[in-house]
Length: 490
Image 1 (tube, one colour):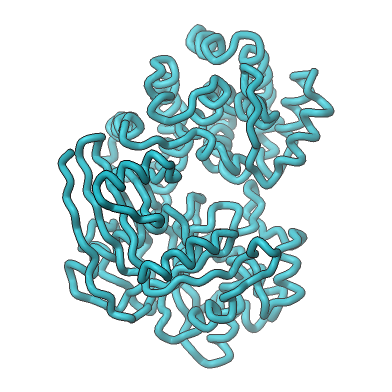
Image 2 (cartoon, rainbow, N blue to C red):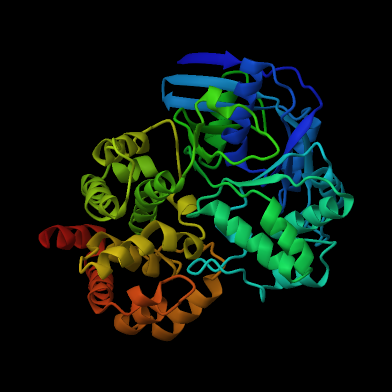
């Protein structure tokens, strides 16, 4: 194997960015860009404090024990590897719930760091559900127990929006300039949605604070792209064979993209020197990626998982599934996009399929299938509604929705059981219990969940009929029968 090794730069001890969501993607994406930038420029101002808001206290402490250094393995293919040591993280904190049920071990330290004048940017990768927004409307779920807790005890926040509001309140009271809030999660208009969550929560606390945030805080949008699967024992074994025994290592593809709306009143790193696309409007890139890449991933996840296929590379190796992905991207997703002049969506679709065949990554379909209730509106359903309003069908999406509904039952087409990881999993189980023997009623009940499915799409009879038909074919003919039936309709 051809391996290039790049050591981390010396630490500076300076922190200019606080990141919420210390997961694999952050460590393999934003932190890599900052490490490369620091190496090229010598600018040491932008060290990172990374905080975990969930249950992974072990990762926080493990990174502390490793002097906040870890490795990123970037595979172009099974034979070409760049191994980077990353040292741009200067501090890790834990503000979630530990195994004993105690909240916020380092919460006050995190709030102090967020309120510090040296913190000029706050970035987030907390996943779609971490914003506590209704996926269909974008409204803050103020009746959610976590959000309600932040409203009742704003100085002891548990959510990402709550942490931002409390930190901004402290800066406002101290006369400190606000930081810029940069969401790096896969949501349409993620900057606007983050702004919505923070403003609505601030309004529950103080109209004056909300007005200051509205007028003074920048919430630029961004689009991030890099495939970063969950680590497996095989990944750690591969790295150990290269004399890298790092429990905090992450593996990803060599490809990486970051498109950022250039709106940083308090300053920013010169990210463009590392290939970050600093633009006036992220929306076209964001929607393209959500509908084409993420939408294809979701199609593969639900259809593949139902057929017992474990990984992306195995799924895209199924000729009929690969053909479905390309058809979906070019016939259903691409026509709904409004791209800048010169964008070639055929080339983009083919490049995605090539990336999916990277055999060095074992990207599990069950990982992609998580949290569908938060993901499907922007990946499939908004585009399908656009087509429905124009009198156009979306048979690939209809098949995907049918597969997702079946997936939420918790067993595949062969009867093998698995865990459904979704904030609405209890509701899904109830709907299957009530309607499981009646496909029309079951599909109708799922499409009636207005937090997921736009009401106009749920009321579009041709789309409803297509989902019911696809569900029946899946049940009777399995994956191959459903794909054959879809092809016969062309």
